[in-house]
Image 1 (cartoon, rainbow, N blue to C red):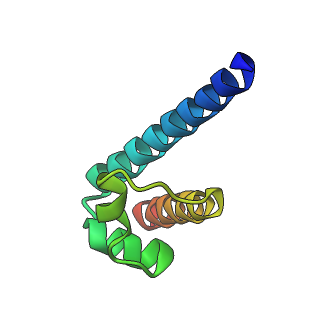
Image 2 (image 1 turned 120 degrees about the vertical axis):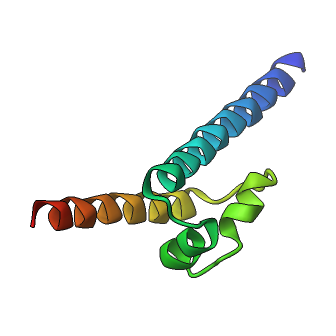
Amino acid sequence: MFFPIVKVWFSLHDLYMEMEKFRKLVESFLKKTGMAATSYGRNALGDPGFVARLRKGARCWPETQEKCIKFMASFKATQSETDAA
């Protein structure tokens, strides 16, 4: 009976750590680009309050994280092309 409880706790702990990594990734992107949190949420997801909720500890679906990561990658690619021109 003890093992399933421990396994669930580790799963939740791993999920929390993954969310922390994602939050840090978003914060790093905002700092490097100088983009406002509301602009990020609006451009990446159509939700200007996304980063504010993330900062308050909200979790998000893996699909939402994927959209955000794709947005950041495309933004960096666009910036690289602009810088090269």
